[in-house]
Image 1 (cartoon, rainbow, N blue to C red):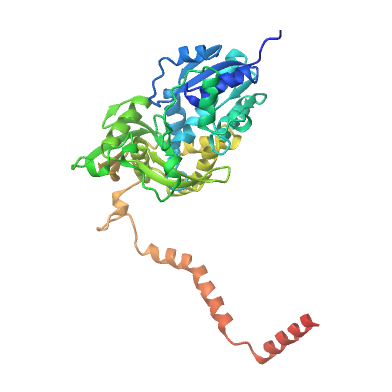
Image 2: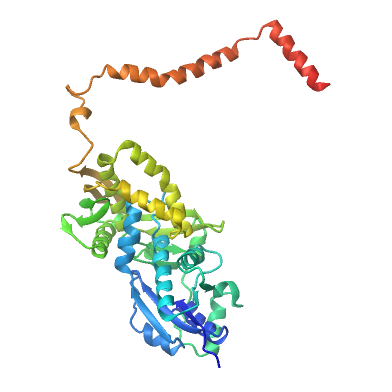
Length: 422
């Protein structure tokens, strides 16, 4: 009997992946190696090894990706001021490439020929996981059960697990789905599929109701080195601890809630509700610091590329060559973006209140409204006239077009018209 081919399954121990583990082994004939990624989802990871092995897995890797996730994915997105469609700070999108990379790392370690995931055929995650897999290991096979097995929903999977004595915690389906990591929590589906439905207050996990937040505002100072946050209120912290601290501060004041109907890559509009308290603080503090450090045209060029950056990230192209060039560009623009951005948190709001940097381009001698000796205001006259020249020429041209044509011109136009008719 030939040895079974190995497949790496992204495993959570929930209903879907429990059924998939058994199905991949018994129906598809794979030797299943489970991989559980810890990206700060806060779920209980103890007991997963025993459950996976008792369910038929040959092995399980529980990989702590928290530091890598924040350092190599979240912080570069902060450097790039990455916001998708004006609202979304891309918490789920950022977690997928680091998980996809971990799946390939495990596949290489155990000699697996395939990977598998629990994403459905309607969403973005299937694209993100699989593009990461193919980019990092082109010969890898991908098995996506939701696109190929006969089961249509939760009830079918519960019945499947009961038929095959698979241990699950079958409970009533949640009124919405939730996905959590160190950067955010997302809520989708169920009652939230009605874009007019107001999210229930008891849904939120990271942030208090802004109405119940403290009645006194709180100032937070974020120190950056080359665009990377390194300290909160003067306390130097590692990537994970820093993001956790910002989440705590923002959550206490109800900061970072977003409700958006976004455009999925597959062409479907989807309503998502997000909590990103720490990320919201870092975004505004970073933007504030850039205002005094970055050259105007460098900032403008970077901002022109942000929509492209966020689209690539959202659609799953983190490991594409174009994304690597963009990451290098974003990183290069951040050289010297070092200093402090200060924000004030109050009742769900995050307001910039100050910024400072040793290498600031802001010079009070030039900016002042008082008397100065470095700026000749008379120079502005020629500057304005030169920039107004094309506007004046446009108006002159338009005025000429309004003048009634001569009889000769009118006859010429009539002859041309007659010629076209003939």
